[in-house]
Image (tube, rainbow, N blue to C red; front, side):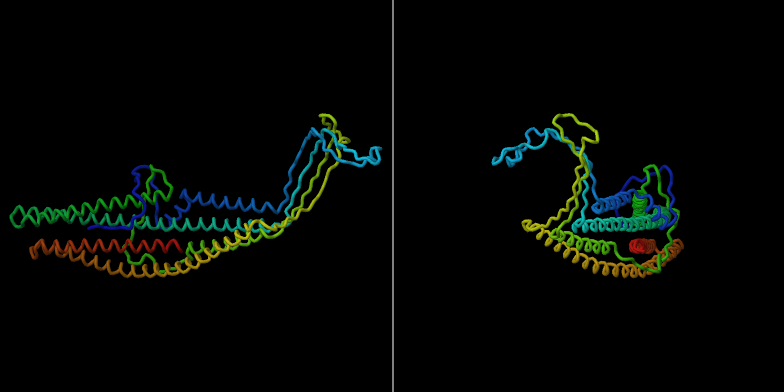
Length: 432
C-alpha cells in the first residue's frame, strides 16, 4: 500500500529532544503561528516603513527653516560705472568699487510650498502604499493560516495512518507465521509463503513512509511556529475519521482580488501625480537675518555693528516646455492604469471561478469521503471474516490474500480522500 499525502516544503531536521510545544487544535495552531512566526516581523516592518514614508511626504505641508551663517571676503570688489556728479566730476563716468572687503551674514531661511499639486498627490500615493503594505501583511497571514492548517491536518492523518499501518503489520506478521507453520507441515507451497512475506515487508515499508511524512509535517509546523531546533511540537488532538470536518462554508474576498483593486487605485493616483507636472508651483521664501561689513578680518558681536537684512518673496514657476517628458510620463501612467484595471478584472473573475471550484471540490470530496469510509469499513470487516474462515479451514489462503489486498487498497483510497478533503478545508479555513 502506498499512502500519498499532499506534500509541501522540504524534509527538515525533526528535533527529538527539548521542550515540547503542545498544540490542542487547528485554531490553537493558527493562533500560535500568527503570534510566533518570525517572517511576520518583515511585513510589519514594511508597513512601518510605508508609514514613515507617508510622514515624509506630508512634510511638504509645513515650512522648512534653515539657519545660516556666512562669512565672505571680497578679493576684488565688483566695478560699477556711476555718474561723475556723485564724485564731483560732472560730465564723466567713474568706475567705482562699492562695498567692503569683508562681510558677514547670519539668519534664517524660511520656505513654504503654497501650491504644489505633485507633492499633494505624492502624499496620497504614500498613503496608498500603507494600504498595500497592510494588505501584504493580511495576505501573508492568510497564507500562514492555510499552511498551518494543511500541515496540522496532514500530521494528524499521517499519525493515524501510522497507527493503522502498525495494526496491519501485526496481522501480516501473524499470517506470515501461520503460513510458515503450514508450509513446514507440507500443507502450503512456497508461493504462499512468499506472498505472506511480501505483504509483511510492504506494510513495513509503508510504516517507514508514514513516519517520514509525519516527521516532515511536524517539522514544517515547527518552522512556522518559529521554534528552536532543540524543541519539539506535540499534537494532543486525535483526528476523527468523520466525513464532515466542517458543515458551514463561507469565504471572504480573495486577497489577490483586494490587492489588484488597490493597485488599480494606486495607478489612478499616479496619473493625477503626473498631470500635476503641468500645473504651476507657488512658493513663499523669506530670510530673517543681520549683516556686518568690515574692512578687516575682525568680527564683532556688538549690536550696533550689525544691521537688519530681511526679505520676503513669492516664487511661481510655470512649466512651458520640457521636451515632451511630462507628456510621455502621463501617457505611461495611463497605460499602467489600464494594465492595472485589466489585471483587476481578470483577478476578480478568476477569484469568483476559483472560489466556486474550491467549494464544489470540497462538497464533492465530502461525498467521496463518505463513500470511501464506508468502503474501507466493509473491507476491514470482510478481511476479519475471511481470516476467521481461513483459520477454520473453510477457504484457502489465496482467498484471504485477495481480501487483505482489497482491504489495503480501500484503506489507501480512504486515507488519500481524507487528506484531499482536509486540503480543501485548510484553504477554506484560511478564508473565514
